[in-house]
Image: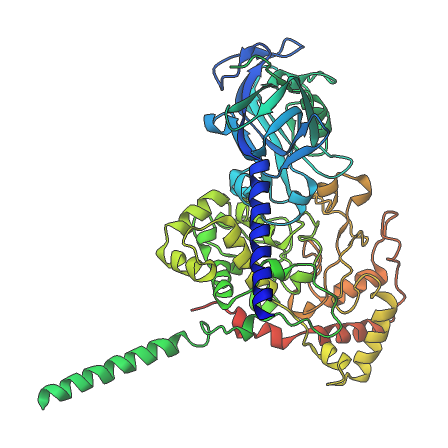
Length: 249
Length: 345
């Protein structure tokens, strides 16, 4: 009797082991990179040195551009999706930060990618965070708890602020000043993720979109935006600054 | 023989020096597991802060205490948290109307006490901070308080061998991060619990109150306890208590956080525990003593926007004195003299 019991448990153990192994084999996991290309309209973004123009023909330069990306979700053809729960701080000044590496993505054909620009409410409310969300990254308001989702600093002769600077520091996770924006991008050809080919998604981040659609930003009137006034205006503008670059590079 | 004697005497001397050294650290450095045990006082609600996610240890507590009293957190190493948060005043700044900061600068608000923080839903007079772990970042980075940046603080700590040892003891890692630093401070500050005043003993039937104090308690429950809710003596809300806006400070309180008109001149309802020791009073320290505070509610100027719960209270001179005598029963000497929270010398 004892022997039988022992045998059964051994058989059971082997069966579980085999099932687990077949499960691992069935779902291969691979890497995916997302490369952000920072542009201002048709020009490449260059800090400090290049003058750009908004819709009102006000010229400006940019000295700082960074933003948080999170809650990345990849959607498969069959409707299932894969969620990636890490935040990334994309910073123009740091080349490496513009290339995001995602690991352990299940192989398959994906139709679209979804992510948020910002930091969701739970990460704003549950105390000290680490990694990209570590407050040492200076994308955090200490006196009014919350992350700064996007920083765009620069200067413009049109600006009436001291030294003609403009500063858009956009954040806020609570209504009515919620500045989290959901971005949805559909692939024209399905994205195939497999261990045999390394997949990269190229996304254009167009800074000029922050100055327009739906609201055209007049730098002589709006040159400093932190929370409350105008922050949602800027957020509505940046909601459409991302687009896919379809040509495979 | 002579040699033997020398060796013995050297050992004896060494032993004496050693024990003297140990004793000189006593009792500040002897923090036991029992010292960092969270005991929820009888009648207190469930804490908001989750110590489960930041389990206090003697090593974490000692590190938090060291950080709390170390001016290394400020830009020019001139002030520490403890400079303005004094133990004898329940960690408020005794006899100071507005906070003091770096380079002799003066802030625009009265230093609030630190006690029973794990029951607070948000922090500061305007409630701008939503989590205890994040609270210290505000004074550290404020230009008229410690004027530092967080990254630089971490670098300074990482360069300090003593801190490397203390962080390693507390978190089993010599890599110092903002998370570990802030969690250590929360362990220290979170255990500052005041629940052993004469009022508490009276509630537990371990002590009695005088007739005057009892009358004060009765009046307090009738007129004040709706906002200053027992046993924490605050309901964690923000209210306009009818103070005129100070024309030089132009501080509109909660409005700065929410941007909502209705929040203008609302400030946090402060706890009244240890109120005797935290003078002066109000967000800008405008009232020097409790008599002026009670007098404000009895005769003060009230505006249209004043909270609906706050109405002119009809109090005789004697009633006012009685309320104050009750408020003084909230002084908790066990907490004020608790050696665990003293600055290590």
